[in-house]
Image (cartoon, rainbow over all chains, first blue to last red; front, side):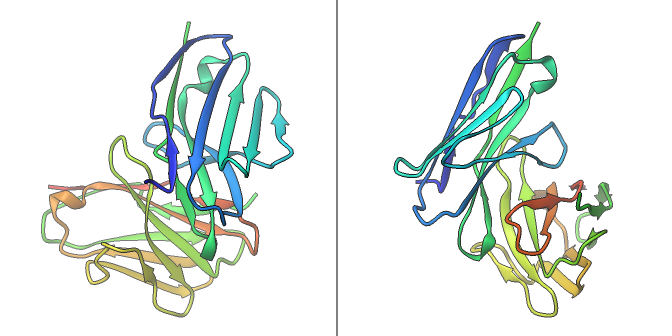
Length: 109
Length: 115
């Protein structure tokens, strides 16, 4: 089983739609959780951290469920510029970042 | 925010030659840097953890004699791909942390093509 699992997609959605991504992780001792965004042929960039209490940043909402070892990202009112690959990232022992394979989002007119 | 600079951004080399990639933390000291490799349509895979002043820690399956890592100062780590082969063609990315923050800052990545 992969340490961090994501549906690779692609998710093709119309502009203005709401889309949700899910991620599961296998190591119950994982300590920190993030969503990163990666555009084609570019480095990953931090989108937001994820907390059990849930956190929101504009159109983006992230949620962590430690009991289920499950992380989610919700994007409301999708924009064309949201098209990218979204990476679920988990840190554990040794401060290593473990990346999911990423979920590709394509927002269309 | 913290900035990590990686150079070169793109390199094409002949099979059998060596390529050095540099990763610099520009406005903070990074005792630990991480080197990743990403093949097309795949996730970033950690290759090794670079520790300032000591030997790097390599992930299972990564050849330490092929991928030489040097972290001689708190702001610079280098990855040298020795005797490169076409199968080493990939996107190599470094990252570093600022202090104890779990957040990582990434270099711009190096696209290596071995012909």
